[in-house]
Length: 524
Image 1 (tube, rainbow, N blue to C red):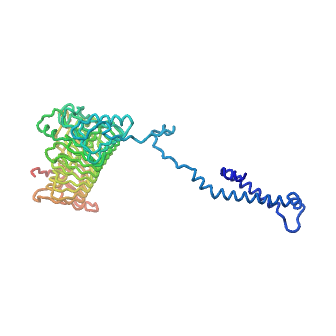
Image 2 (cartoon, rainbow, N blue to C red; image 1 turned 135 degrees about the horizontal axis):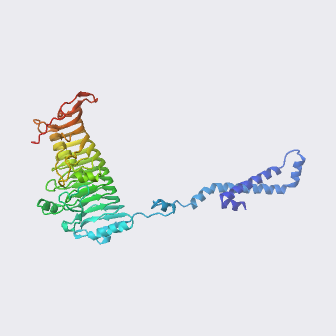
Image 3 (cartoon, helix red, strand yellow; image 1 turned 180 degrees about the vertical axis):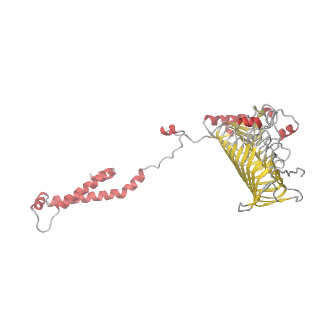
């Protein structure tokens, strides 16, 4: 009976222990005493004769043995019959979690499941659209584009979607513009940018989305922009060319480990987006003959990180924008909190990293660091004009290397290109708090050209730790006009007279009295 109790449960075992203790107490009371004893003792001896005492002792020993056996085997018994906990899936929502409902992992589709053929000739637009529709219906998912050449017209992405390009996968944009849909101008531009009226959409497009990822094993998205560039130069297009990839009014965007090449127009354009990360991405276009093929254009975007990229294109490598003249002022969306790190850029036609010229929503809090710019027309540039309004403020350039660059550092305030005659020439931008730290290089023709003006002075510019090897020492290679700021410590070549001089301890050495003089020479 005690054996059954001990084997059945810990509670029964505890009862067995109690029973054993009671038996032990009974045995102690009934045990014989040596010598004389009290009447009570004689009374107990009469109540429990010797045969009964032997039986009670035996039962006590059996109970003790059973308890010991249970304690030595109970751990193994629990391990034998206890199942490991099942992994929990992420709840679809707090309500679903409270109801004990769980969602499955997002589905994964192969483009070939929708009839796509990767021969470079078959048009796969319907397959891409069907795959995206399936992902949208499931509330998110991943589309794998396998090895092959997948020709397509433009198509849209959806929220909570990953577009994954395998090694050797190449999405090809169809070259016939009749397949490219027309869209209204961007509200902050009011103009197609090259033509009034509608503009062509992008090859891969998305708007009002959340949680979008474009990634892969260095697969390629190829805009096949050659025919677009020829038609643009011949003035055979009636609408503005479309970008290669454009995401509008979207958030939580990741673009990584892919190659983007030969865009008809701007390559990667994020418009009015938040929380964007672009990393380990290669962007290519011919360095000549590929007009306006900017690499990355964050436009009225906040919280952007661009890192570990290689860019070689036919216009600006990276161009931060925020709208054009009165349209950008009315739209009022700034570009802010942008970090550009560990990027290599080549731009024979324009600049490595530009701000503007369309910056009418404002640009602030930008860090450009660990950037190498080579074989380029300009290194880092800020460009604006009367009519833009807004501001360019709190911009820091740090650890910039320049190699064979025509003009290293540029601030230009008369970039007079406007969408129409409706701009306000009295809407002048503010340019202030710009710092250049650890600027080095070789083979630079003009290291610095900062052209402020009486109506748009450049305020609080700082140079610290600069040494740039120049090609021509006969010219004034550090050029300034309407600039106020300071030089800290050693800077080569010799800074312009517009700037105050400080030593490394930030002690004033010489204060400038020539902030409004102009020493700009465009002859070289």
